[in-house]
Length: 168
Image (cartoon, rainbow, N blue to C red; front, side):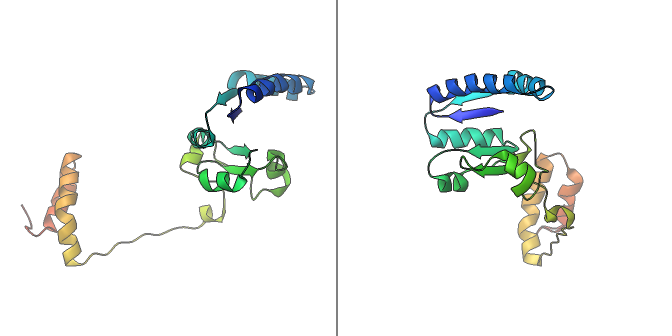
């Protein structure tokens, strides 16, 4: 868990409050919260909201709660998160327990390339390609060159056969 803020004073207050609140929990929640904050807690102080958004996108968290002005800007700007919670009334707890579309979200920064579980994960997607002779002739030399640079001579020769020069 981490906090990104433009206010050093807020960051210091949060560090103090997390220690207090975690200590007030009953075990085993207390032990878990104290260990999580000790081992993974972080406060990042940034200069402005653009830098804050960049840091958030780099972290690509499972849950991202934004408590700031102009929530529409944040919703439009942020790109890498499992689930986004906008405003101080929208707690992660609600998304996990009652309001969220799912609770199966990407962890370990996987939100950089994946989203939460949804119906599309269960739909088989088929892709296909078909080229005209002119398109194959245009792609052939480029694909052959890339293939040779990658050390894939078989691919290169397959592309050569479809190039204007034909078999080399």
